Image (cartoon, rainbow, N blue to C red; front, top):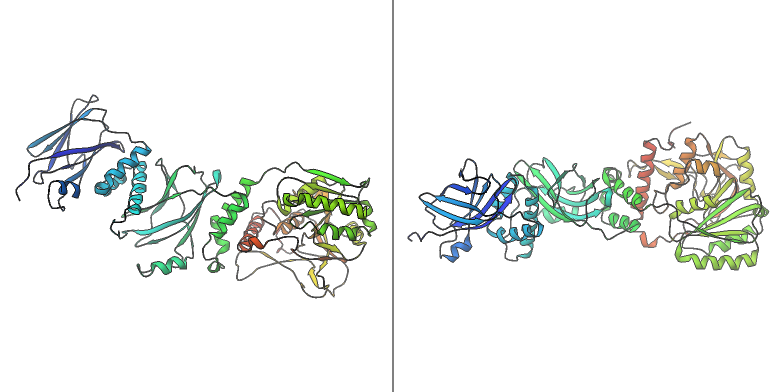
Length: 601
């Protein structure tokens, strides 16, 4: 076939890095580009020799070949980078051997985000890889970010696109949780075909890279099973979790970039921002893949970012205590010796069972009894119940309520702020006295025992077997790293002496202490979720003051244990919440913020 008449075209002129890029084609395959001369108002004339100061990459242009009825394997296209920024209406003169082509009036475009994506989308099909090489070589991460995003979209949207065998590996960001100014949490998986990456960055659409530490590996047997038929050596721990303590704007797009000696692997993601408070925690924990494989590593997972991410959510939504409203039923005692504080959540009917016992107990003649409604959904029902049972029993008490749910710790802290007495009895709504006089037993023990900090009664199930007679810190070999709570004698009849005994820990289902001590240590730590480990934390805070924890088994009450909570709707992630609380508790011990229950006095 004879050589066709010479044809030449510069299709695009754009700024990239600190220079100018050209995209075009030259039909005469016998000629090669030797030099490029530029004329502009900034400088009169400047000539660049290919291969020394500039970059030239030849590209296949099947569209041009088809238009001129040529075989589609000819490399007629070109992408050129020139180390100079052109002003508008510059002249570009291309020298092809003995042929000179003048392209006048080309204005290099400073591409905005939308223009950049449109430009790349239009030029990617035939010049994508050269553009990628230029963006990488000349360090223009903004251009490269847009290139990767558009190329990914083109491959996803084009059903006829050929399958691409990855050269470096494959990666997916399954979840990207936005934690506002506290950072982001990424969950996903990857498989590298060779050496591990030398660096990992988050790339913003504005181009700035943020270097991150090596993500924590987690088990993904589902991914391993899917990939093993395509790739060799896929590890079960191909999943990853990464918490990046850097504020990112959810309105922007981002990419995770893995840098290798031989190239880069990019994966784009957008930040999820559609959940709040505990709902976001639930979403995150439900996104933890294959938790049954994580038993031995879950503490390290919390330690490697998951714990900090959940703490960030807790801090993000933690607010100052709301203003509360209270209603007094009956005439309150002038000088109450104890404020009894009972939070109500979900179940408000326990109020009537407790009042039925309190009415026959002379101890409650001088008690400041406070019911704290920590559930706006039951406020009206709780107040109606209070009206009915005060009319029946005529025992004075108060009801306190507010417009949100603060949880066990927050409800007690609100109650203590409203308390009038010097001593406190914190009590679950499902704790029922067995006989009158139990509060006097606790008060007398507090006055007589050496260095009392917190006192707890013997709590029993309805069959009089032991529910709680003190707690001990336990190490579980199946959950390394955690310091969990054990209940010695639970389920057994209590045959020990009725004399008080010092304990390592006590449950907060029913405890007696001074209001001053409670306030000094800051009350219950509200950073624990739903209701675990706040009591252990309070005990260790009191012990750090040098005070002691005592079980007073002569005082006996029944505890229905968690019937005051309705946790059926969160049972799927309840254990992970408990373990998060356990991680947080243990980390506070390690940092020395509270006492260590394992240390012998």
